[in-house]
Image (cartoon, rainbow, N blue to C red; front, side, top):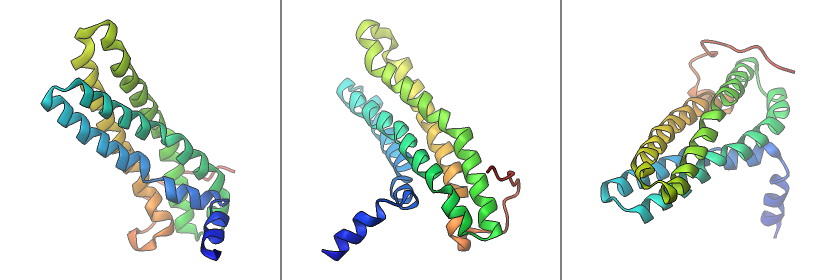
Length: 169
């Protein structure tokens, strides 16, 4: 019972929840891309619908990841050395810059779910647009994660970030 109690206590720490959730946008988006590619090859609308739902889930999962990351930033910053603090600032800056790509991806995937019912000729263009934006989201997610991994994992660092970002209070 103490393990469950410990786990539930950790869920009250935003930095712990951020670590639990942060792979979802990247891994789920990669799964959505794979599903969409297969659906396009098979020319299966039901498979496309499934892929769009996965892409929407992946894209919208950026919101709780970012929210818990923001809540955790002061605590993580205070327990980090100068180099890790610089990487945290870069990570947060990249997240602020890149999150919109995920939201646009979710909107395009939602449009790809709905619009073809009324305008069937939009099915393929919207599916391809979803694929392009999902790939962009995956790339942006990797870019954000690259800096985030260097915050607490000194073994991944080659020194301070090449383009440090000023710390925001």
